[in-house]
Image 1 (tube, helix red, strand yellow):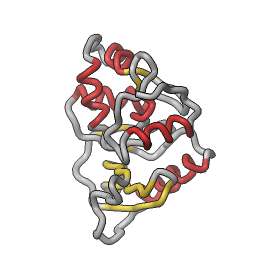
Image 2: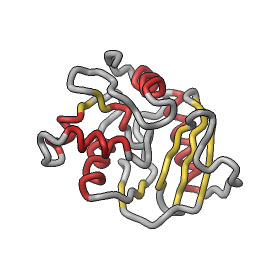
Image 3: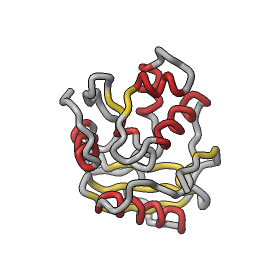
Length: 172
């Protein structure tokens, strides 16, 4: 089963793990993952909160650990995203990308019926609520360059993920 994106309410469950790119936090509403956060500057959004996990968050963590070990290339946990129709359409395009499959902002804009809206796509990519599970790290400039990344430690984290998936890229 491929990743499913649906609209749901806020999420009360939390789970964390340590990965090669730092700590990762998964938030679930009990039915789907609603947020994934990557450690930035030594912190996660819910540091200090006690773990109150559920089977969805636990499964997401297990799948993420498999991804980092190299034994998983597709995520199957359900996702629930809240955003504008345009943002959700962009996130669905990102979710359709497979392991090692790069794309560019213009290609996503065309895929969602908004040719020429590459900057708007970049904004939606930056707001992806479930990075890693929805592979926004696979988006490069049309020239194959890393133009930035809003998650974890930014460009170094994105470069690590691209290398992990053997995606060729040029330095920004």
